[in-house]
Length: 293
View 1: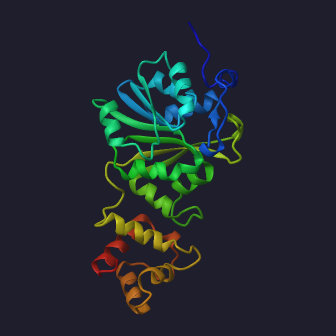
View 2: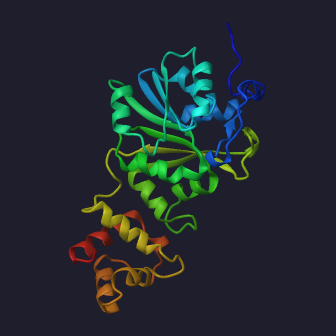
View 3: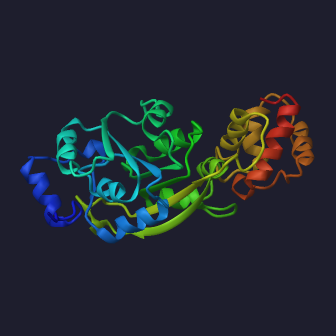
């Protein structure tokens, strides 16, 4: 028996009405109702029947259904208890899908991977993320160094631009460096708000983060490296020397700082947004060796 895709506007409305579901603004719920966008997301994830997919925030299962048709195993984590029975009903034709009720920020992902994706040739995260927690979710996925191939997510367009930005670009900042340290970002497409129910009041984009086998640069102390990056962007209009002075050299003279910047081959008058990830790695290393923490 052929059934209509979950993602059509008609079927989405029918499922929502039949279950008396109401959207919770606090959970950032916007359901996708466009086949083309779903196929672009699936294509970017590069899945096959030997691979697994972790979905975060499946909603009523529009993307989950497409993942189930493409990947060997799909695990979806949904925070909203009200959606669990709906998902179980609409995804019943797909035995390769399991749905978990939980907050992905609190879930032990290593355990989840062992339990669901053991023996597969690769795993990707594929999701239409709630916009208010995009960054914490993505940083958790990257920082926990999970065995991931790709992270393909629908996020706010301006956040996607920041993640993919290169040095010297107005969008380039500590988020760009954090994401690019762990992965190679690539914008897949921009998405109009008309493809969602309800329509969000921001523009969206699909971004693919190809997870690196090892970080983009070798650093001696990751925590210190990211602290130096954050300090360098503390006030965007200030030079790197002024930002670092406020954070690390408040009590000492400027001379020592300028000497260390010279040693790292960085002009003190440059701004944080002009430094490449390699330059930040070098700067962190010089400061660390000089005992600046």
